[in-house]
Length: 361
Ligand code: DP6
Image (cartoon, rainbow, N blue to C red; front, side):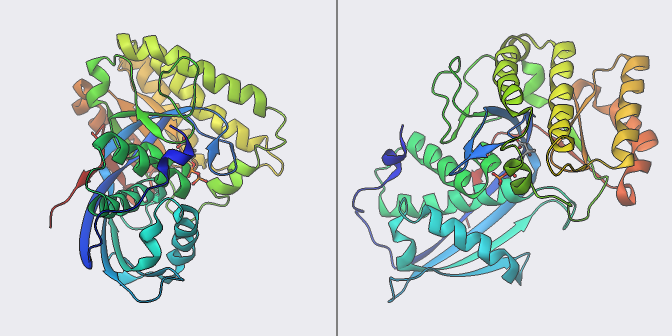
């Protein structure tokens, strides 16, 4: 599909008003997206586990209005008006307007809430942009009921990507791949796809405990971090490495080779942070407790032979990944050894989920 395929024709219906609600999960990348070109095109392909417990629920009320020149929307976050989110949503609406020409015909009230604790330091842009895009697609489907399901999901992911790159991986499927790759059929820079190859059952219920090391605002946002890959001395090698890692991951995911999985996933996480540390200007998002946790994970894995590993997103928090069969032992390890490195002892147990769902009011 090309960008033009997402431009709609004329609509069959024109409802006066209505309400739609979607719940979209967060995701955690195994091969990381870091570096992009305009508009929101990834410099390299990535793949992520879709999460389950960490999610955003968004309702959009829509009602026809007179003026058709401007966007009109109100925004509520966890029940309260949220003025400081509005510029981001305004930019998003401007970016997607040509793909959803009805946007200026309605007044929207957007109500959004997260399942994870407020300001936990977990990026909510992926689940938030995915949930909002699904709501807008649901409205478009009411205007054009003949739209098929595959197109609905592809376009929701396409729109979500225009809001936040990683959000395109939070729409459908347990393991989602985004970014064109010669050896992955149907892969695209425009939207995420369900990983098309065999995946061993161990990965279908894989667990992710998010260790909340630092809940404050990050010193450098992902958006700035991506920009610093332009002119970065190691960028080209890094992008090539991500392409190669997707090739390497195919037999690993297919066979359930956890040793190889751990090596690849931890290397991806540290490479992401190495890119930050070698940017100009350079920056460090890890905290002392991030390193304490990593060392404890390595020690625990070495002594118990339990296949736990870590990954990191663009922050200080650590995602601890492990098979469901090891859940009990790993939960003890977290409680006894890792919780002390988390801010206020906080962590969130999550696991691989299935993708976004529509909530019927
Ligand atoms: C480190 O998707 O947050 O989590 O497209 O600017 O919104 P924008 O960036 P964003 O970047 C995510 C970066 C990452 C890696 C990943 O999720 O692949």
